[in-house]
Image 1: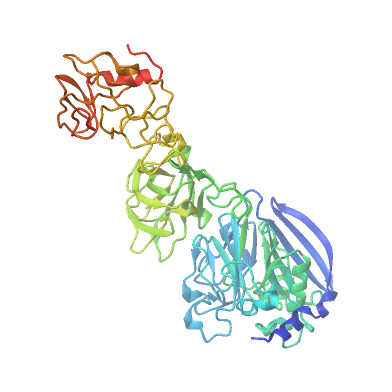
Image 2: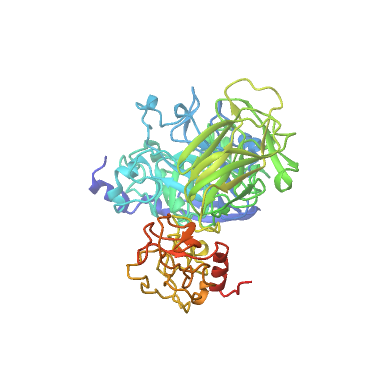
Length: 623
């Protein structure tokens, strides 16, 4: 590690590369969301091409190479995957084909042995030195190189980005595309500069930055809404290439807030679907034609295979679909669906839920190729029943690997799609509020797969299991503050232990005038410990307010839905209907020891009268 004074000298000195000047030669918009610019530079004299990609433009999605068995030219890969723009990415080796850093393509992380993360390469000079850009749903993440993290103090101390203090961190689970590179060129707005671009202290983590070569770089603006794909030609009489310090200056002038050097030299290639290579790829390769490389970064400008119109990585975009507490349906035509893999192997058919569906084939493989997910973003945590929608003619394969990611846990099941039609249950899972959750269907299978084994991606439905705020019932875990829609009723119901009218008093008694205030104890001599809304006064006349007629055979009458203390109170249990006092029948509420003046309470009325009393209390007249 360099000492701090030397680092300050590297970063603060006036660099010789500051003489770099840019002259814009041409600019155009070959695709919506992509601006192509060509520059001619002096000091050094060379040609530069820049693809500025608006990550918030409709239908813009970024992808990268899935783990390959062999190298491929950038144009070959771009044509196969039907991207609009493609550029070479990370440095690589062969036998096996592997990159210096980490890699994710088509939503699948490369096996460790094909990346610079594997301990088998711990003796290699590049081991774990890389930084990366990772493209996920509605975001772009970046992580700094090992050298930058080890020397964070020279950049002002605390750095941002993903896992800013962890070298070579595992990328986010839902990363769709990731490309690595090093060294860093621009670190959170500060370009790397050197007192001399050829000094041994300049880019101490890569000595080949001290020579002029063709170069490739990836940058991101401060608002994380513009991706910069940049190539610099060299090795010809027209183009001399650049030192690393000149490349850093270039990226800073182009507006990069964060930038990484990626594989350059003979690998330097920028390709567009409508015209092929825009730069001198053979010249960069010392006249040896187009080089095949290990991985690439690509941009879809038309949504791509099974992606839809929504921008894929815009930091300011709202969630694709917010699922309410009760659940909802995610359709393949909606913004939360995405299909990955070669576009030639995705088919769209009419029918199914919402009028259309997608399908692909299962095949024998160790990793998925064409697969899909329905992203889940929930307003409220809880248990949800997950179902998928089948179309019998196309839902054929009976061993579909399926993953439900819920609350940070992946639940993997084997789904039998064979001939299923309509909604089919996947299971019940506990989800968290928010995102990083999904239901995914994969096409890879460990065993032999017969021909024409279709896998369908049509729709997914989540249905809340158990109570929730908004289901219309006031449940034990809810209350007036937490769920007023369910828990605020027009009246206080007796003896249910709930503050039904949300006035802060549970099972309060009402005054005879229905004013809602508490009524002092009116029991006959004893302390009234009932939980009903009224207490009865012993008597022989008609009950006051909603008391109704006097009980037969000299029974007692109630006062405002309350019962009188039994004249010869029996020991019937609370809320039991039985005899009271001297033969009256009624509803008994309270403690079982309800003798005269005791704490028991009897309602000397037929049970059918009680609903009428409640109706009277709410303003209705009994009929």
